[in-house]
Length: 193
Image 1 (cartoon, rainbow, N blue to C red):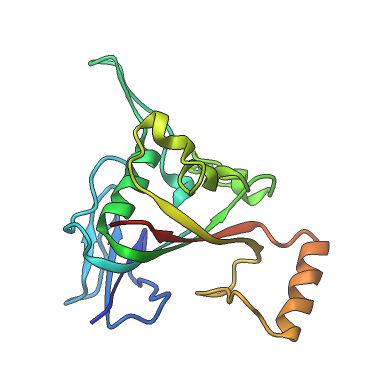
Image 2 (cartoon, rainbow, N blue to C red; image 1 turned 60 degrees about the horizontal axis):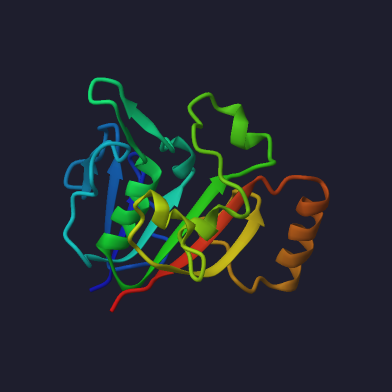
């Protein structure tokens, strides 16, 4: 039985890879009775599941809401919530487990429009978490991801195919030329022994 976790899911988690079991995490309550949606603030709390629990994890319009830096003035310490979240995602994924995210990104206007966007993603941000770079190691990242792909998209689907048909490629080209591709898709695979 394959298990999928959707982060920041609201009342309706997305099942990106059509897994047998679907779980979600959101900061707000409102899940339907009997659903497998937990309430957690992932900017401060770990993902409340054990190691190697999920075959896949998704994050739609979510990463931009996780702060890059959090300062505790009382203890005079800094934390890196986005780095910690990426560690947590890697921790709960099984070996070769998949991460799929869709995030408004720089230089797109949608990355800056919402006043709750505190983590601006760019086309090179993935290098902090993926081989061979792992640039976030200096900030405490201890996971390992392989970049399957990164693509600019118009946010309309649950899953943007790797190899779209001719009609989709023509539509994507039109959206690229008119500046409608505001979101970056990341698809990573967890590198684990």
